[in-house]
Image (cartoon, helix red, strand yellow):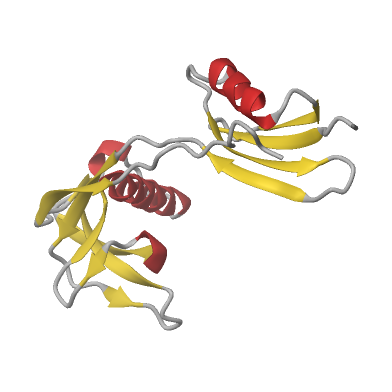
Length: 181
């Protein structure tokens, strides 16, 4: 009886893909090996296994995930839909020398949790990045027009918001059977 050999491509949490070309111990032992080797900071997310002789895919296995909590911010601003309908512009007010400067920052529909006529809900981390990027762009604009200013001269205006938390459920680990063919 010929030994069945497999090859597997393993996707890691760091973004790397590790390929194992000659698995002849069986998939159950290979799965245990992955759990031991990648149990620390670098975890395996999923792997795909195929037979070496026929290139037939025999399985796709995912690692377990812990439940995730995402902080969301509900901004009480009137979002403006863009022409193509792919997202919304959020009017964010900055203040410089007592003057209000409104910048419309774009958010793609895929990044929006909820949108209504008078509010929009987006992840907190994304909002922080957008505000800082908008401030940096405004600073660069003033510098190219030969204005004398510091970054601290541009401040964020008043924004009405409230915080929410969204929980994403985890999933159980998938693994091959002990007597895998």
